[in-house]
Image 1 (cartoon, rainbow, N blue to C red):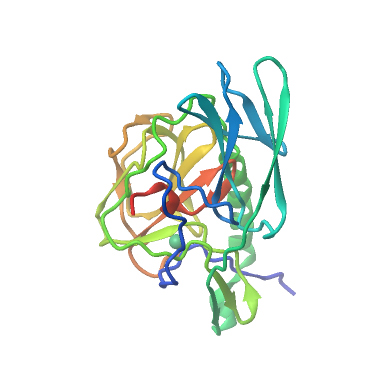
Image 2: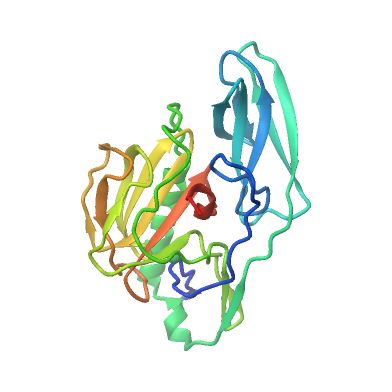
Length: 278
Ligand SMILES: [Zn+2]
């Protein structure tokens, strides 16, 4: 008997209730210490940037006036009520420890009944998906020491943004991975621009994501653009914020043309809306 496994769909185009974002913080990203959000930790004043870690993973540290701030991505799988423990080592070797209480955020769920053939992968496709998943896990671990040029991002394509980040679908009662990004509705061929200045880190044609580009903005801040019909970038190339890098499409497993846009911090997907103007 052949082994089969349910699909974990990355693409989705269905609307979900609007994301709740804490108002009042002018700087990007908006702090939202919930699963899928971003925690802002004040590390205090120092001449040189402290090196901060969440577990083994380095986290983004930026200067804000006279002090340093750690911006920590919180994985969607984090339990509300748990504490994130971040360590920051200053240039003089002193280590400070911080704990952030993770709040609650309810993400939409969707239950669908579909024919099993629609959600199961052939052994060949499953093997391909597993290879791609391992490759992407390595890509997302990238941490380059150059800090991002900016934390506020440009919307990478014109169009209506879904608020489906974090949406969890169940196919025939089986849960999928939650939606790791924002979908932007746009016609096939619409130019896709870099959401911020960065370097092209990875380009590939992936089973679920289709033609995909990942940009490295520095210190573990990455953006990902999926389902592209065309790619106008090369691995290793530096791109400016707003520079065209590809075109909207429906490659991979997509229900129709749209841009899937994800933002990663310290390897975890966080809500792109926190980085974009309202
Ligand atoms: Zn998507």
